[in-house]
Image 1 (spheres, rainbow, N blue to C red):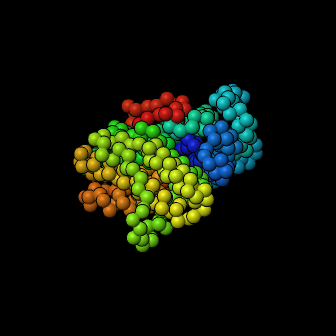
Image 2 (tube, rainbow, N blue to C red):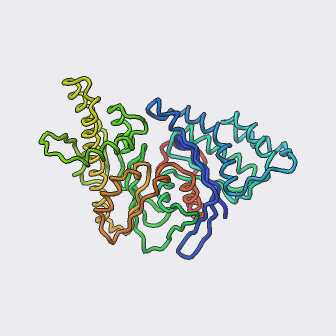
Length: 396
């Protein structure tokens, strides 16, 4: 079956098309098209994502992203002559696009000039995320579903990050369904979420730990702003931290930040206190020297100690959960999974008998491929269904 997947939970407008086939212990996928339009350049000047601005950009970009994806998949074909969409069908499409009224005319114009692409189902992210942004993808998916006459599969964004570890640089990939790989533990770390999820079988999740305040990625971005670094902050902090690790120093006055909740008996996280510790450290340093952040060496020290603290907490709790739940497979997903230091520490710390999966760097962020794969498993799981509504706080 061919699945077209739409992802608009934050600041990436992403669409992918995959062809999925069922085997005994494997689900095989062929990537037909995969396109992402990023809004980072727009939001970077503000140091974060503005929901209504993100919504506007999704509405502006989504048809263009669809066209590029269909072209890549070989499913974009211009009609020999312009056709007229049935007025009743057009009326239904207008109704489902009532939230995106400015998109309606472009949608009709696009499909009056092209042949219907052969798609079997549409998967779309319904949450968690920024609700105005989510609604663009959902409304667009509804319009496509109405026009093409195919079902819609609501997908949890975090579920997508779990499956993001399977597509690699090749055009084909498989997802193992063999019971021998379970139980699975997934550490999901992104700008909006930090959680540990126990997976006893695909589509069967139990959240065993979550952040009580800031997510890890959010903390990276906030600390980056304190250090006067550009958005997104994670890569900038990691770059400075790596430079600091490469130094040989015998200084006895190194910075030391707390490791929040590292010894708590549960699997929850907290990064707000760590963020505050960095804030107070910078404040104290500025009292002595207002221009202290002009010194790259200070930025490197703060970046390294902050990153070490986050990674030490994430790794410690993950390793403890691996032992307690007798985990056979570890999946790390979300934007922070692109952090090279996190991958290095986890891979060197995990027992060799445990399989460890990280997504490729280009798929650690939001993308349509992960939604397509999650959508396929959602489609196959007849017992589990979600509402086709935007839910900014949707949980696994």
